[in-house]
Length: 386
Image (tube, rainbow, N blue to C red):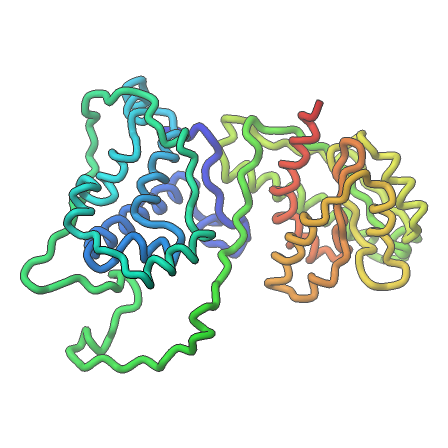
């Protein structure tokens, strides 16, 4: 099977071993294996793990897994007409049979328990967490074909012999070592109620590039009195750092997506240096209006009296995009709290996006991999606007 849309992406951080080391095709196999293990885990605990409790805690349940299978089927194209028909005929009932290991009605009759008032209340309170699906996407698009050959052994619903019930713990973590050795398990220290409410946010996962590929033109403006006066022995380091970060990010986006459907190309057309003067920054920005897709400034985003890049930017943009840089800054501050001190902003100037980056080359290398995969979607909207 080949993917019709861009393959799912994961964190592009160089510290991510899976992304940095394994090809996307192998990552997909790992993800598929993890999905099968999750289904098997839930099948073995049908009596003890109810769908309502799963929804309350995590926002998804076995039904959601089945629906996600259908959603993935809508994104795939088969190697031949019969495979494609099989994918198009896959609906919720068929996917649920795989996830549950039996027909959903049979599973519900055998394992589902009547919810208590407390469970119902917790379920209703957790509705903002619940997964939402497009019913049109879940609808079947073809009649079922004949059987397709498969070498995959599909696990059926697990049954336990005698009185032995599977542990709620998975088979890969949280084992009780004392119990494994035949000793009485230690009593865990009570968890404060406040700690139970703490939620760990998942790492940032950049969205895939716009479908169909796109050509991106970029201009880079270094804002620095000393760089403008050529007072640095090494010359300007910020502008080249932006250029390198942009190209590396584009290369990584193309490496982790299906470029046969269109790649992202990037052309850095203009690099210049201006002093920390509002009027000169404004003049340079206005010169670039609608001549490139993206202008990235670097420097002048701090608290010093001459850090005026955000003010100059806001003076020339037609619409501010305050949420964009706020999100990027928040992500970067997870590793470096001082990143929250950046006053950089972003906005639309004609058909050009303008984004303020800090002057520190290290900070540039951390921000661009987060910013660029987001901003190209806004640029695509500007490129296709009437």
